[in-house]
Length: 424
Image 1 (cartoon, rainbow, N blue to C red):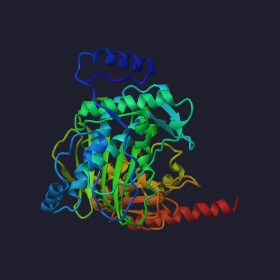
Image 2 (cartoon, rainbow, N blue to C red; image 1 turned 120 degrees about the vertical axis):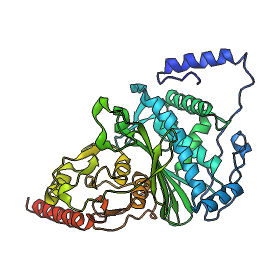
Image 3 (cartoon, rainbow, N blue to C red; image 1 turned 90 degrees about the vertical axis):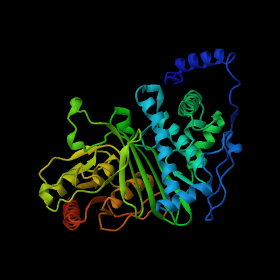
Image 4 (cartoon, rainbow, N blue to C red; image 1 turned 45 degrees about the vertical axis):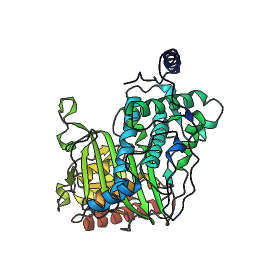
């Protein structure tokens, strides 16, 4: 494995100097090519960019061969699913490296006050690269990050960090012979500016969902989904810090569970979980609890992300005895899908608009595992309206048995809360 470029910039300079001195004895380096410009979304399926545009070797397997394999598997999105798994697994390599060595110089602050690390950008770049290399046809990506902050004065050092980390991850992985320039990095990040919508195919990505958990060394997820004509048809959730078995078995530092779970689902084909290092996928399903007294519920770890007082009132109305299980990111959806808990409640503070990348992958993992995901009024979530979800109040998820009583408790609690507020 190549020597890792540290997050502290002096380390980066030392590593660069060492690499420079070694190049005299090494074969000629790969040419650093600018990343290809983002292609405009289209409703027609066409031919992907040629490998020459990337400065890379041809992909393993032609589009025709991938299509044949997809038909043979009985899954019309088998090729896309394989590409999505490869993309998020590649991004995990970078994220795990960064999380082990987070320093203050590697963190920025976005306008919405949520932290952003170099891993956010690096993850988005690697997912975009892998999807372009592995899937034929027009490319459209709706993703969380853009390059605006990195183009500002004073961002040169962080941009250099991202460039080094991305290139090093690609080399260590060995799948692609490509090296990014700094301008190529900025262009690759901006591949995610697609607006989505009801027509055509659009990948939807949260490069690090649960950034605060990531910074604490806790739970986070790389969440990738595919929209086809406005519907979520595929989703993968890479959860590097989530035990492969049920979190009910987690017992602090004494736990011997394998850590690192990759959830996946394709419409009509069910949901699965496997280890990030490639264990055979196992089918999963939501729990079968039909009495809310015996249920446990998930909610956001951060009170800033969901109103804990409201979810507490809902749980009380349902008679839930267990304390809430608070986890960062869409790892909650994965845990719910395999039956670790029975209910997921999310009620953001007034004025917050839900983004599609925060729920697309998690939703299909849960629904293909036999669960239901709706807004507080019981409406299905609509991912065809662009980058945001227009919904009623909040998001709830559970199994089919509990949904009627959960929906009733949610609506009654919200009504009582509104009535109380009107009297003030």
